[in-house]
Length: 104
Image (cartoon, rainbow, N blue to C red):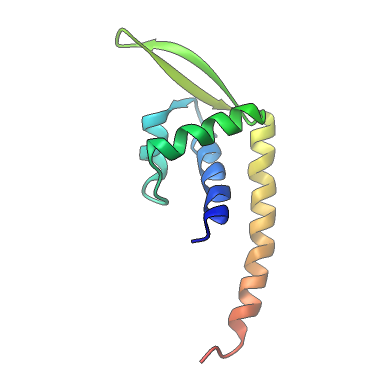
């Protein structure tokens, strides 16, 4: 998959993983990994970029005596998911057109 295309998918996957509740890095990785490969070294820059863009917020909370950083989705993050769904619908129409013809 094209790296730029994958980058866009990863951002939306991260946002989607946070739609229902706040979460932390390791849990986000485990939630999205059945669908797309992501490592810690990939995830944390995405989280930072999404937070800087206003799509996420973060807060630190104690868990088992240690501080853990939790992330949550903002209204802008939910809008980004909606926009992605609209874009992917358009992309699906293009994909269907390409597949209509006999490619053999």
